[in-house]
Amino acid sequence: KEEIQARTITEDGRLFLQKAAQDGLETVWDRYQAQQPQCGFCELGLSCRNCSMGPCRIDPFGEGPQRGVCGADADIIVARNLGRMIAAGAASHSDHGRDLVEVLRKVGEGKAPGYGIQSEEKLRKLASELGVAQDGKSAEALAVAVAEALEEEFGTRKKALAFVGRVPEKRRKVWEKLGITPRGIDRETSEMMHRTHMGVDNDWKSLLLHGLRNALSDGWGGSLIATEVSDILFGVPKPVASEVNLRVLKEDQVNIVVHGHNPIVSEMIFQAAQDPELLQLAEEKGAQGINLAGLCCTGNELLMRRGIPIAGNHLMTELALSTGLVDMMLVDYQCIMPALGEAARCYHTRMVSTSDKARYPFMEHREFRPENARQLARDLVQEAVESYTRRIPAKVLSPPGDAVKMMAGFSVEAIVSALGGSAGPLIDAIKSGAIQGAVGVVGCNNPKIRHDYGHVTLTTRLIQNDVLVVDTGCAAVAHAKAGLKVPEAAEKAGPGLQQVCRALGIPPVLHMGSCVDNVRIFDLAAALAHALGTDISDLPLAAAAPEWYSEKAVSIACYAVASGVYTVLGTPPPIFGSPNIVKLLTEDLDDLLGASFAVEPDPTKAADLILERIRAKRAALGL
Ligand code: SF4
Ligand code: WCC
Ligand code: FE2
Image (tube, rainbow, N blue to C red; front, side, top):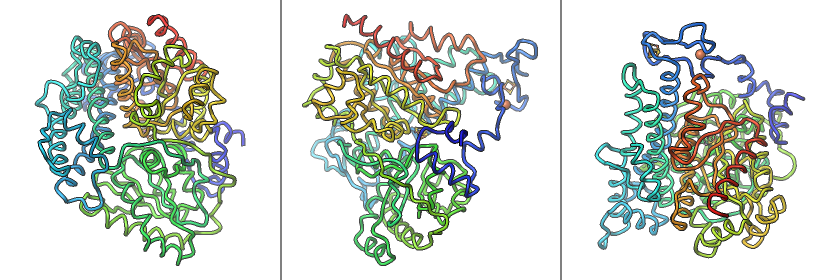
């Protein structure tokens, strides 16, 4: 019992941790425990297996070896390891972006039945930004041309990514001076893999600078493309009401859960789940309907655009299965624990993987391509209906109570329109001090941190102090479960923020989307900086990832700091084996970039660090 309390702050999490234990289901927390103690060298970033003369380890106490076989010291090894984490994270977001570009092209060529252009406005806006001639082109022809221009962003032929144009000029100068302006998306990742090969870049500072450039190729490249093209294909999110937690799974309906990241699959499933014929079939099988729910970021994508409820965040994915109510779970890629397929064998759940590049044990592989997606989605929804009839009553536990109400859909466009058409009122509120500043609280869950505790504690403290919170990813789901994403949550905010929220009818914590949608936060920050004729780093802004686990989060944190936003991490990154690197990242970067990292596992203290930073930025602006 105590152990369960210590694992999560969520009620549904606790209940289903018990249920999972009853069912003999092993969870991420159990496996985390079995891994204790985890390797101290690796925790400090001091182990290397980049070549076959190794693996090597540096003794942090100074007694054992201080160099790997090749001669790399602690600084080089920590920097190389961090660089490869950034590369993996940037690659993940950017490859996701590339998949969307592929669909955009196929839509233009008429080879992607079921997909279409939902926001021609955004397509045209992107075209002019990319310098693609529009001269009377149809939306379809333009889609092909824009897709081609975006493909170029991935390559090696440019001096700077096109979207660097969105960055305030002062920031661009900072990047130029440091030589970290991102060029090609794939180029920066590929170059990182090259630099970290044995015997290439052995200057930890130059490695870290390239790490920033690599991360910028994600934030102002791959992730941004993923977000923009998703908006073109599936629509720009607008405020929408929905619900969250395991109670969104319905005992009397066919429950289909989508998990992963890319809306390419989930949007097709969304369409199929509304097919009258399939609804009829569900009824024939005794179900009251077809209930679609999300997990993690593909859940966030559907939530933002379609109001589809979300069952939980990263650490809830196994527990969702333990309800015994999931008739089918469809996954694409990223953050899908390889344990899920086997976990599902405890129940009747059909587990289906959908992407050629992401396969999992004990899952059936049904590959989605732009050409076959509509038909395949229909087939799978039909199979989910069949699966409903095979539920195992003894294994079912229906979550009691009600789901928590929430609002999502706060794209930059939606925020600006809520403000009455320009960012002016937000700037005024910041100037008057009604809003002290804004913070992006983002990122994952991690069994090293009590589930959702980091997010909810930090965010509650921030809004109490009149700091507007915007969020994405699993942090956003945590906040929603805690009831922070309804307009009534304004009462939990300080007096100034409360007043602003009430006037606009918005929650004090605004859901801006999935993890790739962190770029929306930086778009907004850049717009504010433009409006004030200043740099992003001058604004009273910060970011936090209280429970991060993923390499993608490392890339996000690095592009945040490189873009000028102070960033506090809850889980310590593997850098503490190099005091030089810790000093650079947590202190010296401030002089170079006007922003730095902090590491603070206690979310209350993290909030205080952020509040202090916001006060200092306000003071410097004379506010
Ligand atoms: Fe060891 Fe150097 Fe090879 Fe790393 S690159 S495994 S430190 S020899
Ligand atoms: Ni994005 Fe982190 Fe969730 Fe995965 S889904 S767990 S990267 S925040
Ligand atoms: Fe190790």
